[in-house]
Each structure stands twice: as structure tokens, then as C-alpha cells.
Length: 186
Image 1: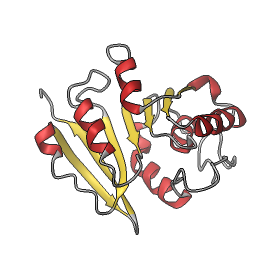
Image 2 (image 1 turned 60 degrees about the horizontal axis):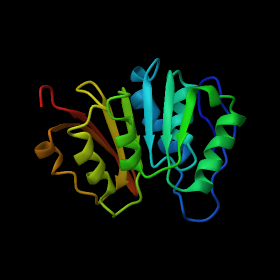
Image 3 (image 1 turned 90 degrees about the vertical axis):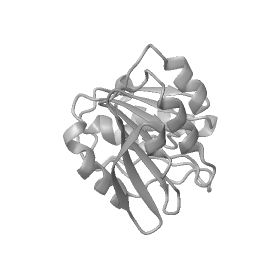
Image 4 (image 1 turned 135 degrees about the horizontal axis):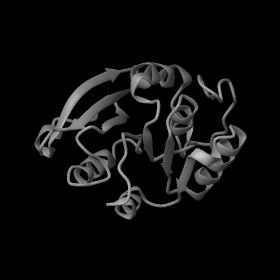
């Protein structure tokens, strides 16, 4: 796994051994960032369930102003810190070693993000819990782009009722990216 583009281009990234995390493959990451690239420069990026930190590091490398990386697993947080240091992007990344909902509550009324990416463990409905929280949160606004990486079979039919517009869904062999934005005035 490596940084694909930007100032840290081609630098390899560490991942945790075993099956505790599912790093996004370089091919899927490249497809995702081809879609996101117009929105990346200067954005404030939030990476939930960050794993190795590869997605946020890619965003910073491509011009994001800053990123907050949230990960509950202490070993994964150590991996993220190593990756930020190795890519020389540590000054633009802040790592929060805590539960995602706890982290969101700690940032409430303090920070607003332009883009939120989440790749929660599959088939646990954690993305729904986060989307329910964010629907009423000040951590995002009507302009924030939310991207959820999920299993192909994950149902997102509830997002309209939560006040989100489903902008796009990009499917791959085993998973998908769902692009959402909070409806204006909701």
C-alpha cells in the first residue's frame, strides 16, 4: 500500500498485520480520489475508523489543509502516527485514539469539516449510528461531503429519512462508496 499522488507520492504505508483492519486497495483508493480530487485542495478532512490512516494521508498529500484521524485501536493509532511521520505530514494530521461517537462529541461546536470519510467494520451498522449522529451535528454542514465505504449489501435506504441526499454510489467487486450530503435547511 502506498500514497498514490501529491507531495508524498509513491511512499509506502504500514498496515496492521492480520484481519483487524481492511486497508482500501490502491486501485479503489485511486478511483475514490479521482472522484474527490476537485474537493480536496484546502479542505478540512475527517477520517473515521481510520485504520492505517491511508485515506486521510492521501487527502493531505493531495492538498487537504488538515485531517483528523479517528481510530479506537491503539495499535492502529501507532501505525497511523508512524505513517504520518514517514510521509512528513504529521503537522497536518491529528490522531484521536477513541471511539468514533466519543470523538465526534468531543469536536462538537469546535470544528466543522468539509469532507468526512468513514470505513467502519462491515455488517455492524456503525455507519448508520454515525450518520444518525451527524444528521443533527455541527461537525458537518450542508456543504460537507460524506463518503461511506461499505459492504456491497449494506442498505442505505434510510438516509433520506435522516435528511441526507444520496449523491452517488460507486460499486466495486466486494464493496462500495456511497456519497452523501446533508439536505439544505434540514
